[in-house]
Image (cartoon, rainbow, N blue to C red; front, side, top):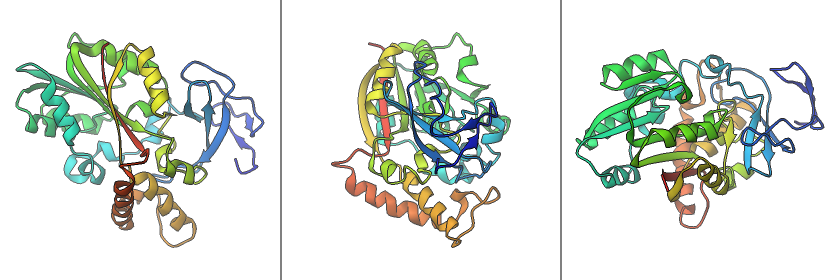
Length: 322
């Protein structure tokens, strides 16, 4: 923490590197070690300093304080997944890829049901329905009322609230959690919910950041983009997520790495801001800066070159019942 004490936003207690370890959110371990400090360099929801701790037993990073009771504060109204598809730069970067379409085509049945957790305004479900006429029912789960209105208009059922509070008799052929599991305070509970909502032949596609990668090490103390501070609560590597999935009654059916050039781009933009070369603020997020697409394209090319031999910054898991 740069040698400085700070105030814990939740308890008001003075925190230093010598402060006893907070409990790991996976198993409650209390021997985690301080890993890095980070700031909100994307939306500037506050100027607080946040700390990430590493649990050696569970193999995860977790944020302190974990503001799971302040979601309205840390997710601003201009958050990328809340925007309608045509207005969201990030959404256009996350259109269904061949892995998702191939997975969908492998699921049997004439009428398929798809659930997306953290689906925002439903733009991904829009594209899935367009690509596969077999998809007859789509369900979205998210937290924003504005996104809810867009999703319902587009024909998706919508649950406004966390998946832990979602009650239904419906079981799903495909469940998507694309960049979601790292946003929740209890990832094990969410995976248990996913397991309970899958049909016997169903599949879950999970995408989540990988902190065991080159950019995560290079930008460890520079608010690495994968921290997504303060919105990413728990971060995994391949082994730690595989272990948690098994503990939740799910098997890893396939795995791959994929690119996340934004994780390189964001700390570089923040460095330019700190040097006084550009301006980024709560009114003009990092994603809205004109340099963002150019830097992102450059780092995407770097990740493309590294892909055949390196662990990349994003992980893709296909899960099913054993």
